[in-house]
Length: 69
Image 1: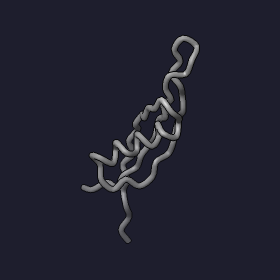
Image 2: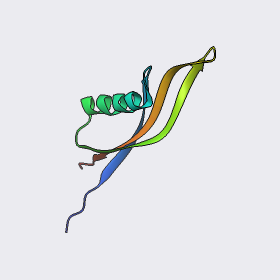
Image 3: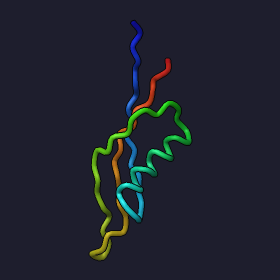
Image 4: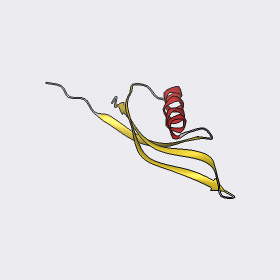
């Protein structure tokens, strides 16, 4: 019985609109240069604050992809 192996990378996506958009940005960008993306897990959410106002949303995302030897 053959098993599969997956690699997990961590990316940070940013958006001026929302955390959801920030996470989607990270996945979309990863998809431009990586193959066989499988699962994305949002690990951490934070915001950039300037002069007392939120200026950006950031999502730290763990993305798994199938490992090919």
